[in-house]
Length: 154
Image (cartoon, rainbow, N blue to C red; front, side):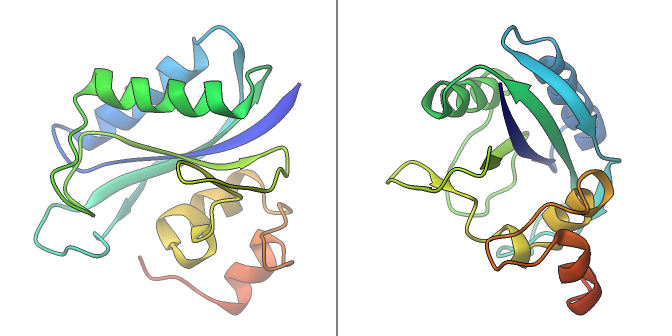
């Protein structure tokens, strides 16, 4: 069984509810087993400031799904929740990002693993630090080492 890390975010239609519901959907999905879920974090938007703040979290799951199937599941869940993509960094009902899949390195048009910018995003790194502080980032540092050296305000 593989271990995967998934980031969740929402800033529309009661974001706390959207993220909590998405965690429940992931936990009840056949072929996925929820290991840990972070607290919910309120964060400022990145890249496009004229929108509401976000609620973010990270979950760790065990799965037998191969990466393409897991990625498709995440896209399907986003669509079920009503996700639209009018422009980059637009407000969203739900955003699900696959951050890591058992340490796999992958670089395709649709998926890059580990997520290449996870360490740059406080809204990802802080929930990661809560649930997997010893996770080694692509830069070679653990999450706790990175957060100690690079405090995030967002």
